[in-house]
Length: 359
Image (cartoon, rainbow, N blue to C red):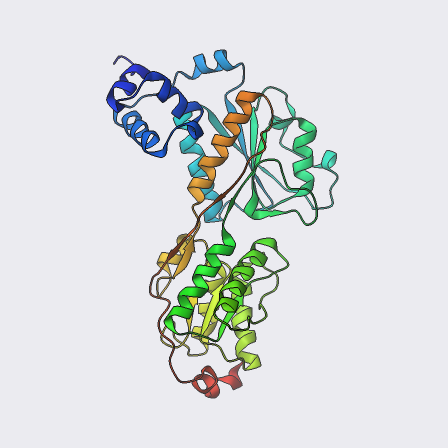
């Protein structure tokens, strides 16, 4: 059997001390990003595996955290990427992730939420990543269990309740602002936002659209979209509604890639081409975006980084023996593909006048 790689060998390969390698594994927030990357490369090159058993004895915990997906199908690509990023970070620092799911209502009493049994068994799980669509009551349930936790805050419906102690967000408002600015820079002025603003993530994205429109001295138009839980159908219905009302528009800012996909399908039904006649921007950069026809200009959410950051926050909380108070907002990126172009001079009404009788 080959001799296991030691932390000293990793340190020597990376040109750092063993204490620095230990900090990268356990307290990465104390190490500069360049050093973290160098140590990670050495770990991967040498195939170093942390001594899991020794870590458990040293820290007095189970070495397991739970990725709890609530009120969402796992088919959603963003949450899959969050889990992947969390799993990679967990493996790097020598802890294990177990997956569980939970379904509950917003008005369920925290003590009545049917959490997975592994969370109720004290000592089995050291902390929880709350992903999926969550409400304030499950945060209260975590407080009652006295388990360290961190929330993927983008999909938290919190209303007027106190913010969770620890959460990782992405800068949705800034991302939507950049998407709208991209359309404005191409020359679009009649831009409509698609999204159900009764849901907080669409509301934040609509605010970014409004910011960009106002900065361009343009009046933001009311959002279009209902029943946002089914984003594809929302996008389809929204595009049809705009066409049926006879609204003038040359571009759409969709609150998600799935909503953009639905809107593109509806536009195509009525003989309208993207981007030749209508430009459209999505949000998320999920698996649909690059496979769309044409490939979708969108806002990329760093979902894997969200997962990794959740694990880092939890690892610190577990080490301290209590939930930390840390809120992190990660930047997003505009990815320009082929679904946007300069607007045509002909109005949209003129383009589909002959088709309107079909609506």
